[in-house]
Length: 453
Image (cartoon, rainbow, N blue to C red; front, side, top):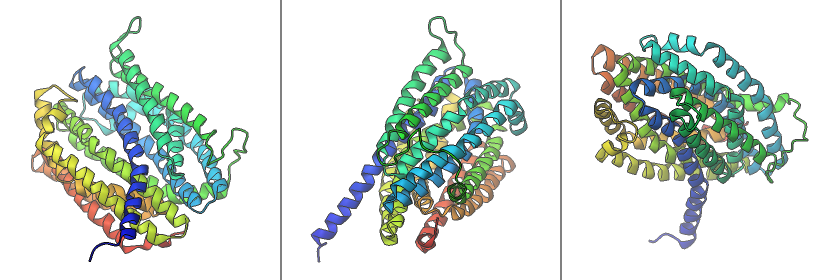
């Protein structure tokens, strides 16, 4: 018996809707990732020490971005629910309160990093060379100067995605990327009267691009036809809305914070293996990030569709949206895994020309290639659960996977058993399979359909 034409048409329409949401998010993530890739590729030509400094500096900066991502998660989920329920005015209220809340939070993070960058790096990466730590501290301080507007860039893009608008964030990120490339070219290598500033130049280029991105995002939000946010609106803090954002955002922040802290410990283990090993680790991570782009794009589609369908009081449609999005994401990321497996060297050479670094990075990239379906499942299903506001479940899975699997196994394999960087990446692969299994089990259970946010 064949499939009914109407059913086939319905499935095709759902896939088209998912792809319409996902492809701009994929391109946005490509462009967003390119900011880090451009920094790494340009600084990589200055040597392993400069490359390691940018890598360590980014580890600290990412801790601050964890807080922003948490608030963005709460904003996306609430905006998606209100849009799905046809409540545009309430969605606009959430957008305004997200800006108010984030202004204070991002300001506090900025001051903390400006004042304590060198101390934090010295505490966390004691085994790293002093010159590397000093360059990393300079990088952190310069990037931190743009942190408030970088928050606006992150949270406004998240708000727009929750409203079902993934094309505008893509365009904003494209502009940010262009500005970053121009800034890096000028400040890393020097142009005309501007001297070559190396690592500090990479930070200046990144900070300028984030400042511009935040200003553009604000301009877009105040002109957006669906959300209806205006400069003349009241921005007085609303405790009820802030509490709703926090109820979703705090567990998401704890999840991201736990992940970042575990990632820092993991990075401490890797950095203790030496500058070449850490440089190879950084190169392999940047190469693997190419697969994050489609995964993050489909995760965005999953967040938006699950949230909007729950807002429209259609949990079955939300469930189907999560499953179909996951399947499409697994297909695309598996193709990326095949590329990592069969042709890792050309990809790795984009980021480094050091033979020792390339040799190690190639092995790491081949290892993580086999975990791409598990990574896709984790990213996309977690995106759907965030759209439902089920961030506490994600937190528990992160603790299991990152802390008790990745970090513990990395120490045992890389340090105790002496397998070095390869052992650390084997631990990463096992962690991805564990988290992929656990997140799928949570989604299939269906408790998230009953959550009130």
